Length: 596
Picture 1 (cartoon, rainbow, N blue to C red):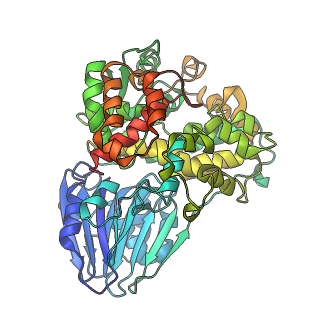
Picture 2 (picture 1 turned 135 degrees about the horizontal axis):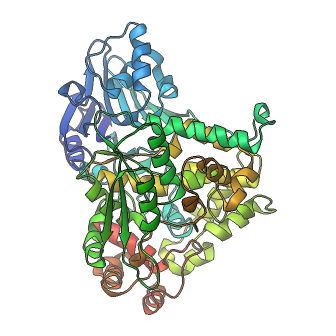
Picture 3 (picture 1 turned 60 degrees about the vertical axis):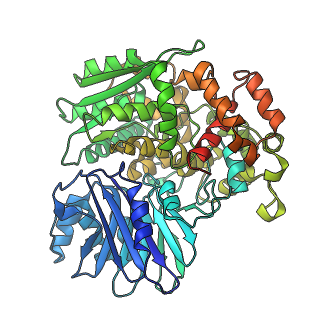
């Protein structure tokens, strides 16, 4: 787990090494253990390293192999790298390190652009070919590792974070109106390739981008599992599916223990993280470290789930750390958590993950986490209505969207409304309609699960975990996003996933491993009550951000709309339980924190 940046000139000039060094320096939190910059002609790479595998300097980056004529900057973890290493040794390749980075480099030498098909794990990387001048960018199947790109005068730049690109200079920082519509309607999700800034884009998940020496480029999507029933599994019983899911998850958690440092688990007390702990204990992981966090109740909302996390920790005899954070510590951390966001992220548990990561990083450098199970196994409340929906897009939008197009227009100053040049349409609904119209999804529910797994999951919970953990040099691994497990879940009959209040097939499989009290409990979320029920210092900070001179100058929101929300800050929640006032304030706080 690391951070990298780079530049590819398209005007024949040498790469701007100083700009790459500035970009790289912003990511010292992602990679506190080492730094490096490399350049050759019109290409430069920078890297910040977090030592997880091969702790020696042999694995330093950017990594150059002069015999192969290749240089790589890599972020992530390839869990099957020992097997690939043995395979490549058999093909005659020789290694100077024991790192997964070098395995990726040799894999590219052997398989070319198809190297990504052989990698199991989370990754983003840039590979430079010395002889051809070609540069290849790649991002993992589920977008667990980020990769941002920007066109500046005469060059393409890329980095693991958006703020790194801003540090390089020359980026168009005007707001993207279509992305702004998505933020305000599509539950603050801005789908790739857009970001809220016009000049910054995201490489989509499961994408390889090849940039030729002449500046031309092409993209290839290398993974898109069908959300359809597999004829070979037509005879499977519910029990067969449960066993298959459990076996696949066993493999997933075992893979994610590969490291040269200790690996812990973030234990919320829900089914998903509890099952990760149970399966690791089942596989003989002794003295496993687990960590949970809780907050004081606010406005009648509970702020912890310690009763369940303690139950699991006791059952499996983990070395458990329980962190209770009083409101006096949450407020001072708020701006720091916003500063850690590569993009504005409105979910209330961003601050929770930030504070938890701060504490956990004092004890371990790698953790497993339970994110992704709800999207992969249909755990959310908007999935059951999708099964037989006659108008799937409207059904989905009613449950998931924070507000419709009319609501967005009523909130935004007319200057920020989508214009004909922007497409002139309801951007969020258009995106969902387009995604739902793609083939290879059998039912409306399959379409919703595919959308949420490929888009919402990537640009909400997964990004949230990456940003907050990496703010403290902590590597987070997500076994529920093992691509083979996701492929299996995509084939599973919808009724099995919806059973037992959602995630039925997973819950039934979990009964073989963890206490039923954890499975049969009411569904919980990572609670931060102070950001749902705004009062005191939190409300003051929200008011400050929305009434500041920067906010007034920007003029994003109609003043009367902001005044109404401030007059009744807790009067209404979005369909997904978010506070609309917090959503507006978070965007302004993020923009102001970037000096925009």
